[in-house]
Length: 141
Image 1 (cartoon, rainbow, N blue to C red):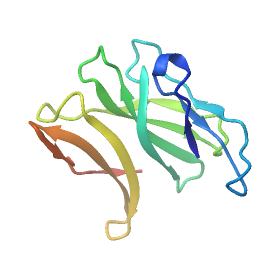
Image 2: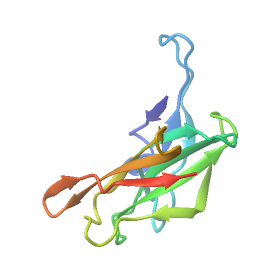
Image 3: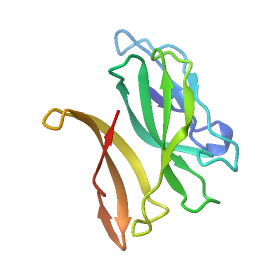
Image 4: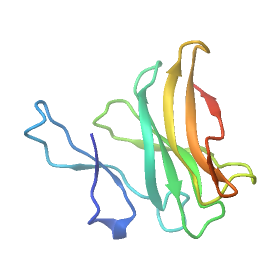
């Protein structure tokens, strides 16, 4: 379970993880994915989703946010051999929306298996003008 610890790192949302076997007793939260430095595209971390990769291990797709950057939000990735980590950010992976999408809102990657296409797809949320849009899907893996 992802745990959002709002009292750390000046509210920039690093990912923390906690675990339970019974939904009553929980392990102490552990830092899973730290924020980047203030100049990094993931100076803040936003929502995302994860999958068990078909080749093994796990992949986490998340929103990188930097209020000083343009665009402010991009989709990023981290990988781990196990859910317990360690998680490593994939520096070569990251993309933003094209100029027709709002640079402040390009986020919330949700990855799922599309059985018809036989591929993992990603749904994203953004805005075009004043309207909320889902720009489409991105074939993955």
